[in-house]
Length: 125
Image (cartoon, rainbow, N blue to C red):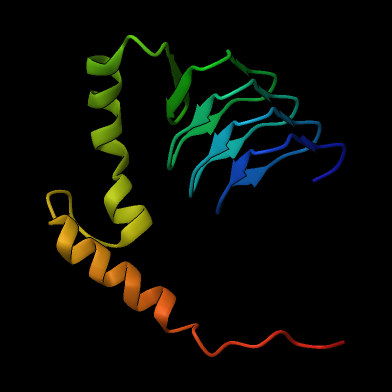
């Protein structure tokens, strides 16, 4: 990854960022996503889980890119976006559970995950 700018308050988690990519303030790249070379995620945009933004693409301010290759959705296109999101399997990819798992079960798993690191200590060196 060369010549990449990630702005303040951006969220990049488990994503691949290719060369010459701009990830603006507040933009989010979720697990399994790929921002192709020369692409831009503008302010508060989202590259959804398991989605690939082709090289030299732009996700406009506040929009969502989803799919492989990613399609662009404006914030008012919830129904169309939801069709794509279901295929991307956010709960399975991020939490390892099937869609429809109760929040009680999901949060118990999350607490166990974080709790397992309760005694971690920084390495010196």
